Length: 359
Ligand code: UDP
Image 1 (cartoon, rainbow, N blue to C red):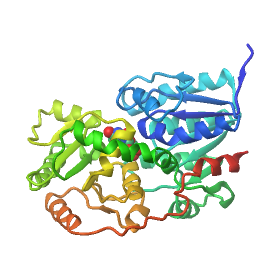
Image 2: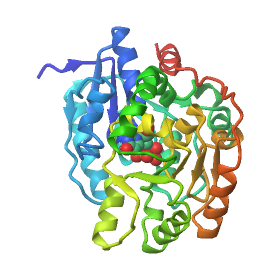
Image 3: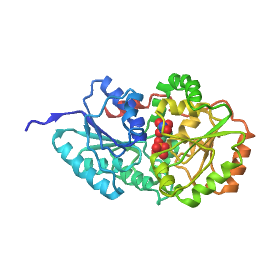
Image 4: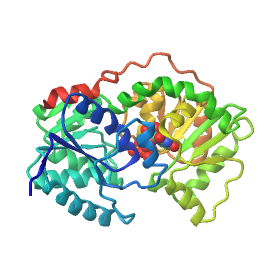
């Protein structure tokens, strides 16, 4: 059988992966690289997957492995097998992976087990919380990668502290900001439409929650009780990740007078965020996007792998205790952000720096 030859395989599987891969697929292809673009199918929900390609003007993947919705280990083993088969049928010298999800780990293992070069985009982030699957994935993938593309200086330091060779580390900047910058005009001009669509007629908060550690009755009740105190003056919009909606439905939880909506397309979502008084989240990427957009963010977790968002002053990591959330919202609403956000290499040119390092 004659194999198809590619310059590189890029593997994605989840919403944040698509957002990170979009500028690189486009940059590589505009520089005449032949890209084998593989979707593991880890996120299949149309709101988290299908529509995003149109929204990001990202071409469809060449292959969708259609990973079944299943436990983490079952998905991992399915992905390893099917990625291995896919790569055995094509001639590809190197594989690129993004972020910290199951698809990232699966593709990294398969690439190295097949003796291919491996690069990791968004390398070096550390929460130091080994209960997070994402943290275990980051560590495993960084340990075996040949090129580690970091978003920030703190990430470089983390890798050096783990005795990763200096020569393998390339501090290329934050690829999510490439996507944000390219879409910024669309994002800002979508704001009024989104506000109209959801009949928003007051200042508002946006909240997203999807980390398993926050999806318990106790934690959710604590968070929503804290927000009850602000519902008169602020509308609270929750573009609900399927994991959150399913948890609420399964446990028959009732949270009155919050605006639950489906996950939004990327541009609309950030349009909504760009007009918010405050964002509350446990998402990783959103901490960075609020920093870039200079919107106040309270992170409902005990730690962050993105400390730069805190040092820039837009983000505060506050945990999930009800009284703390109430106090932090109050003090956040009473404070002003400084105008200038200027982080090294958050300039929209990360894809080009990755290309330069590899080719
Ligand atoms: N996002 C989106 N629509 C939504 C909520 C989030 O497009 O309704 C985007 C968001 O702008 C960010 C990414 O999804 O770029 C974050 O994904 P998620 O929170 O699922 O993952 P994490 O960042 O925690 O890895």
